[in-house]
Image 1 (tube, rainbow, N blue to C red):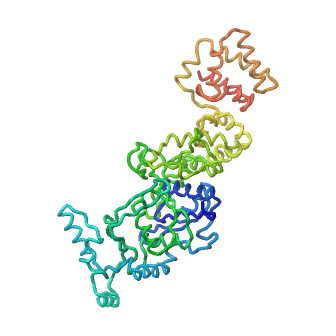
Image 2 (image 1 turned 180 degrees about the vertical axis):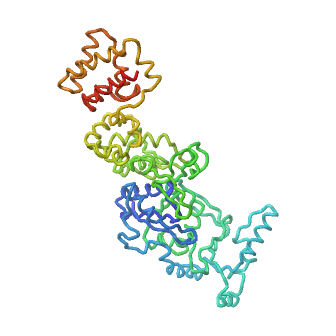
Image 3 (image 1 turned 135 degrees about the horizontal axis):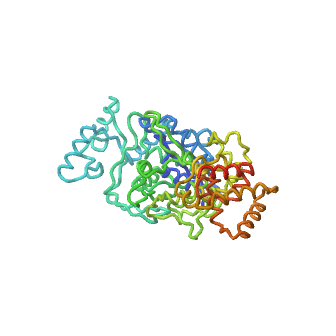
Length: 503
């Protein structure tokens, strides 16, 4: 392994960061930290037509929320800056010129109409139009035109693109850390556009030049870039530069396992596909985020790590340090990883249990105005009793409202089950017993009430069901003695008397 490992995450600011992008960032981050390397953030904003206001800040905020801040990039340790491609465009022309001078690229002056004509002509014949070795000499470019004609066109300011000159009759032998050896017949490759006369490079040229100048050692990216691997390898060779190592991550698939996960899948099936909530600046449409839906960042990072990576053990719960320690690109799968919304909830439930009750109490209190005047220590004690049954902080109210408010109604089915002949008298006797208890603790309540039930051979269900109904309004919730202790003696008596009057 190279001593100075440098990886980059290079998103385009064209909208919110999809969880597929977050997974790519995560694998880059884990690889960098595992190898004591540097995690670089570069913003690839050469396509200014698709630039979306606020997207760049969103990307940075999402990385920070996930607990994987970049080491170097926009506004931070700018050793190889600038880190926005739009601010680097002055660099790229010299490299395009260098490729033309070495014979690895050429000017092409074909108009959009001409190329469209050729495409339609090929389609009519059942073929696909590819601009490369088999037809480049029949088209309008610096390979088919004389030097004087080319100069005249350039001097006249004719629109042009610079195309890479793909070799003919060669076999490329490429390596990918995840996919192994790959062979490519160069005859099927097209002459990709690298640079345009408006002074802007295409992704292919800018990406290669930036990775070289920023001394990137490993390019870890999604498999949608696999078709570009041949061109990128050839560009490194054409420049005479050492190529980084490549690793192409598998797709994240829909919950059905068929096709790539999209925003629409989340909308349709009711789960977020973005780390943070996003409001479209043009339409004001809101897309849900994992943070706002109540997921903990640790849970999101843990489940994302398992989308394509396998630790080789039965362990599923990994904190970030454990992921860094265990991560290995050789254990990343080639095949797509199915997204399972239920599994994401399973991870969140686990991390919920690991949160301190005090921290959860603050989150819960902030969500409910009903709790604003209550002591946060009381709320934390309540959470300690109910969080085992919760997946999100938003579940707490449903599980605990009776600790804060007396029930106004009683579940009809539960009422019929709990209140029989003689129940009223039993509840009145229970009130009398509770009123005699001075040391109102869980232990004392259990001893006194269970002792009374046993001594009188009453049957636990005859007392405990109507008691629970009185306290909660339904036959649910934690231990009744915990509830009684928490709400206190006067409130307990008041609720039992209310159920007697009501039912």
